[in-house]
Image (cartoon, rainbow, N blue to C red; front, side, top):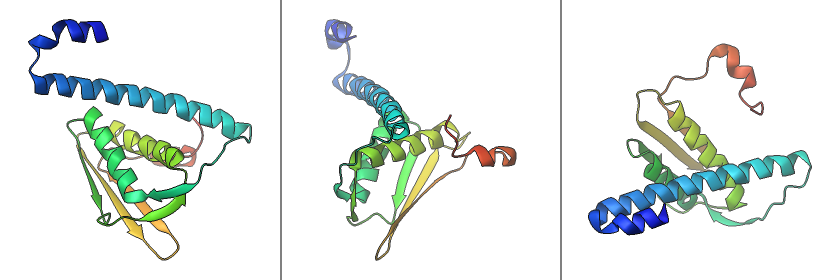
Amino acid sequence: MRARLLRYADQFRPEDLRELLQKIRGAVMGMMMLADTTLNMARIDEGQIALSLTEVDVTALLTAICRRQESISTDFTFTIAGGDLPIMIQADPRLLDQVFTNLLSNAVKYSGKSRRIEMRVTAGVERVEIAMRDFGIGVPADELSQLFARF
């Protein structure tokens, strides 16, 4: 792919080439996240998941995840309400990224005709609450019990 891009780069307008490269980058990031998630599930099964706790700005993390998803799902609108200020917590940013990337990509996948995903961040004294909402088809009532079952 790289050789093809180099060979035909002069035939693309700079903004088209930039957009194409962003899509490729987004796809590669998605594949890396999928591989990471699979490896982490195996580690969890073996009781060997390692947390790397650090100070994380939840607002900045969610914003970065939304921007990354926007580069893949260009016809969607992602909004974050309540995240105007930094909200700092102790967490593993890599694992949080996996969780929210998965939730966001599922929201996109099952959004139906709607092209809008909303997130709301609420910070309390000892907790942070993050809600995600899509306007899609929902989960059938008979499948709700399976919602958190693997695969």
